[in-house]
Length: 466
Image 1 (spheres, rainbow, N blue to C red):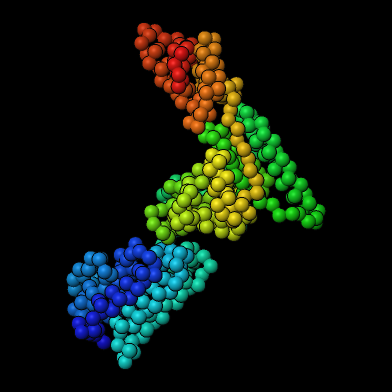
Image 2 (cartoon, rainbow, N blue to C red):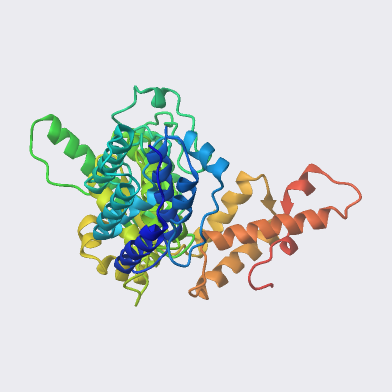
């Protein structure tokens, strides 16, 4: 049967009315272009296997929302598109709607079903058309009713990289864990097993952090005893390993988080022992819905290890109740519960903003059970960090340079303010010293190995030159 397009039927007017109601429900038209494109893809699927006519061209060109550009299908272009229809795929924007506005998703499903029915003659039965409408409706309804719309029905969704978990170590993906998405982040390759004793020695070797080291050992002892109680058939109280790190920049928060991920793997708490560090920009997108996709992807990458959210308070800025960061918080909270056996979340940031952040949501307060406070490094610890950088990179300050550095770090600590960077400031001083040293010795006519290694007072320049 050839489709007959009747201009008097006003297909475009019908579509405008339906989409206008949809966008009023959503509150914006961010998805208009994607809705129109999906509607036209459904037309291609509906007509697949049929002989395309000019009536089909007129119909598909009439499907577009207000303020959107009308499509410009030509006859032979449409013939090729219908013949090459790859099969129905549920687009991500529909999954986003299910999460953010289920009523709007239901309206869209009704709109699309009505559109397809309008494009066939109900008095003449064509099995391919009715089968396609039934298939499309069932797939959309399945996503609509899914507990996890973002990840439901991989066959119908764009391909996503698989992530090995504790339950899939013998799967082909686990045995050949090369990434296929081309993105950086937590590696899918499991690190080599490390002994708990060696990792604790590494913890002890860190400069300063006396209270943090004590807190970590206490946590390790708690986990050990819980495992022993379980092995002996004794009850164990609930334990949340999600935690909050508060402290100024450069106080070792990321370093300790990375070490914790390896400690947890050595104890069998996490399957991979990796750390994925993200901030607001790695979780929040530019408009409603896309944030859910972005955050879900980050959580999936972090599974088996630690998701480290730096400056987490930026997800809930003061006075911005409708900020997109709330979407990210919601996904993270759900993941902390659903993946509690193989995911740890650490939220980090400045002390006062982090207190406000945790208090902003009852879910945050209930799920983050442990708080680690990272104090500023004192003058002697800053000096020790500087010496370790020099030793690691095979530089050695002479006596005058050492004395100058000690005075510099004492002055930095005594006059620190909100911009104090702790170990980051030390690294900046070290890197400037390397540059100054290179400029100085490049002028020498002859160089010795000692010249190549020795820092002098003039090489070391801090925030205040002496």
